[in-house]
Structures are given as C-alpha cells and as structure tokens.
Amino acid sequence: MDMGAISIWISGTSVLIALSALIVTIVQHRATKAKLKLDLFERRYAIFEIAWQYLSKQATDSTKDPREGKFSNIIPQAEFLMGDEIAEYMRLAQKKTVDKWFLEDKQKRQTATPEENASVIELMSWFENEAKEGLRRKFAPYLDFHVWK
Image (cartoon, rainbow, N blue to C red; front, side, top):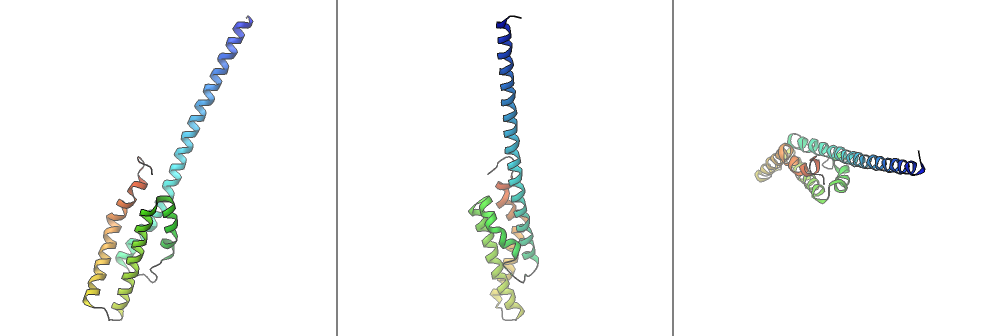
C-alpha cells in the first residue's frame, strides 16, 4: 500500500469513529432526557396520590387536623414541580378542609345552623367530585406522557 492510500484509510476510519461517537452522544442525551422526564413524572405522581388520598378522606371522614402532615408538606414541592396553579388548588382544598372541620365541630356541639349543616354537605360533595374527577383534570397536563410541562 502506498502512503496516499494509507492516509485516506486513516482519514476514513477517523471520520467513522467520530460519527460513531456523535451517534453514541445523541443516544445518551436522549436517554438522559427520557430518564429526567420519568423521574419528574414519578415525583409528580407521588404528589397526585397524596392529594387524591387527602381529598378522598375529606369526602368520607372528618379529620382531626385540617393541616394534615403529608398533604401540607407537599404543597411547596408541588409548587416547585408544577407551578402556582397546582399549589393554589391544594391550598384551596386545605382551606375547604378547615371550613368543613370548623362546621363539623359545630355539628358535634349541636350549635350548627341549618345553613351550616348544608355547607358541610356542599363541602363533602366538593371533595367527592374533586377526588373522582377534578383532581385528575388539574393534574393531567403534568402527568401526560405526550405533553411534558
């Protein structure tokens, strides 16, 4: 083999190695991006589950503390991972829990007015509707695999 042929062969091999390295880099980048999205989904879904459990409990039971630990503690995390809309929604649920708790306390002491009794039923209905459908609608944009926020 003459020097020109060897030089061309080495140049061609170098180009193939460079292209292979580029392809590996692109594949690794895509895999890393997909892993990041999966991790984000898992963290968001964990918040969704806690919120769903909280709303479901409020629809069926009284709670001793309306600022229930897990739910209250994840609101800042929800705000960081999903933004103000979800955090405000969760704060609204917390406020409605406090209202319900206060009214149920009045019912237990038999000092609730008929309007307050009706308000308890409305609040329980709100929690039931949110646990069944509302929560999923709110969280859907953040849990959709096709459209990542």
